[in-house]
Image (cartoon, helix red, strand yellow):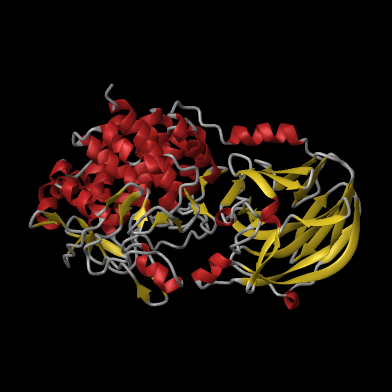
Length: 604
């Protein structure tokens, strides 16, 4: 393997939000990497239990170390030099060559149980293997030192490790030799760059001694389980990734990988660090669930968030039903419900949830400490309340206080959707709602347009060129209809093959690179970084306004060809993934736009 490949990442996930992830060299470059990272339900808080499996092989009198690690000033061992080939998707597989001995290692996670299997296949049987589990038992944001942990070890049929009431079970062939030790000063280069936790010690309880087995499985789980058949589990895992619709070959990995973000009755915003965010879930629901006909999953997701509603507002995060610091999450809920009904025509479900839509509308009319209505338009009173929500301490990088354009486009869309629902259900809608909707139609242009520019925020006016105004044209009920008159502004200032910039590159506040410490990264997060999810709404608005669907699709082919769609890219030269390595709405919006806007409009 070439040196420039050793940090390429892979990830496998399950329906609980647990995962296994590292690099192709197995050098952990982030605190978030680990062979077994358990998610604790119901809030998807993740805990690195098994950081690594350190493999020492004795063959023909020589000692080979398959592992790779970063330490201060050095890399040791250099197991990556022994890797001849690898695949990172859909199932990570690595082939090592040790003289005339070949070893294949394949990693799999159970779709429903918190269990990881590592399968080893040896081409010859005259070897000895010492397999050292390296333990951390910590949240995936943090690191540990020797003084912080005191592990409990129980050696029976399964080897059990326990710390902080979290248990880990390892079932491996061979004898377990207890030999407690600590490995010091692992460094995580990505975290060093990010200015976060970047160095830790890992605990070794001993090793499994395995000899002369051509093929065997190491089973790692959070509870004692019977031995799982690897081949059957592989079929089950691949079925989890199955995408049922036709697509060009270059899109197929992307479509399969989109399922990595799905958990039971919910969607995780991104790996590694995001949990379930309502805004992200509602934006992602059409592309990740409806397109692929996962209607029950979509319905259960909507009901999960409805149950959390508080005074007509849906919380920002699934993990905190009191966090109402969002001016758009509830409006995105109505959007997601409209899309669900568009795909299913499920009138019974719409009828059961209709009253909650009215509660949302009433909550916006009434207002609260965060936002209210100024006339008929939504006004934010505090910051940050929109999707551009980067904040560090007292620093809010994109405050957008006033009347954010996309919030008001969503507000109009919500009123129009409820009007549509009332007709579908033959219910009488409060005339006040209709009056507000009509006044928005009458006055939207006068409030949000200035010198042929659509303001990003009105009152006080902010003419910064950002992508938010595209939602005025691309939502199911667009408040504006002439995107072709503004498309050239987007194309000149914001458009890239990897998505849309969050701020014009000509703006004095534009940040071209997302890198450095937390402050530096958050400064660039919504002030120049390219967001793939915005490409979906751009495609919709463009095709609706008469642009050639095939031409636009081909322009975004670099995105559609990727397996792992990240959260963001740099504002200039956007080709290196940044932020989360996989992000739900990045996949969802590209998928939705392809099947809703591109495919039906492709010209022969």
